[in-house]
Amino acid sequence: MKAGRKRWWMAAVPTVFVISAVAWWATRPGVTYDTAVIGRGDIESSVSAVGKLQPRRFVDVGAQVSGQILRLHVQAGDAVRKGQLLVEIDPSVQKATVDAGRASLTGLRAQLAEQQAQHLLAGQQANRQRQLDAGGATRAEDLDIAGANLAQAAARVEHLKAQIVQTSATVQADEVRLGYTRIYATMDGTVVSVDAREGQTLNATYQTPSIMRIADLGAMTVWTEVSEAEVRRVRAGMPVYFTTLGGERRRWHGKVRQVLPAPPSPEGKSADSALAPSTNKVIVYTALFDVDNGDGELMPQMTAQVNFVAASARDVVVAPLAALRPQSGQGAWTVRVMDADGRPQQRVVKIGVRNRVSAEIVDGLAEGERIVTGEQQQGGVKRFQL
Image (cartoon, rainbow, N blue to C red; front, side, top):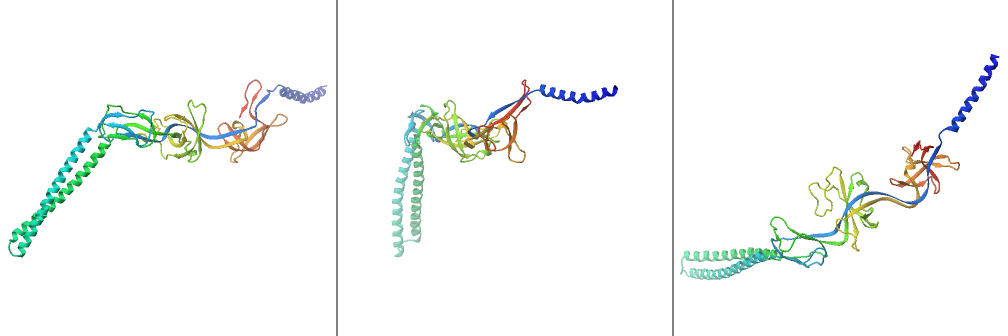
């Protein structure tokens, strides 16, 4: 009887295990997969930065002489032509200096004429003494005096000629300074700012006072701040585009002209720079590119949202980057693809252009295939997320 019970118990144990396994499998938490369908699209890898717009060509008009501004002939926003009169400064002091120099020059020339007459007379007297000396009718002392007088007269003539040359140069410089009281445009362009007013007194003794800025607004330069982490990806000649605030999503395109080799100086900024030196510890470098502004939509000091295009592809197979995993040391990537039975199968793929969101699939996936982007247990408990 006992042996029969033992055999029954031994036969029942495997059955119990099988039933338990079936019950666990039937009641285990279900797994659902987050998937995405592979499609085609455009993809771009770029470096984002912020920049400021500055006219490609501009000139700061300053005063080279001191004095009161008598007349400003232009205002901000006016279009000007090269050679057009812009500013008139009171010329009284400069004109008086020129008049005094010219009068001094006239006096020197009169002195020169007088001295040349004295030189001629001294020459005649020296010749007469030489003739008398030949006949033994004069003293050697008188002959020497006549020669000395001739030499002195010649020296005075040369001295006055030198004074005339020096005074002429001074008068020319004074005349040039007198000309500086009338300031003319040195280029065609638009007056973008005026920093002085009629009646204001300018002091040009220590530095040139700035009166206005003239710029050619037909072409602009974007001065862009690129972080040191990204600057090595930016190079001359690469395509770039930007948008402006309120630009209605319009894009302006150009090519990088140059990347400046040093960040903006902390002591100050270049006269041509649109960027102030950084006040924080982040190091940024300046990249420059030009853009046509024939329609006048761009204005100085506008903020530009810039994208330097490192690589791009059009109408290619694109997959979410979150679904891809790199294979260590192999240069390839893996992705899980749903098969016909709804089960994920791992596959090796090759990618091309990629950014922070998507990647171009060069080989390994076809348009329309469904890939796994994540998985979670039924009931909302996430088990795995790529």
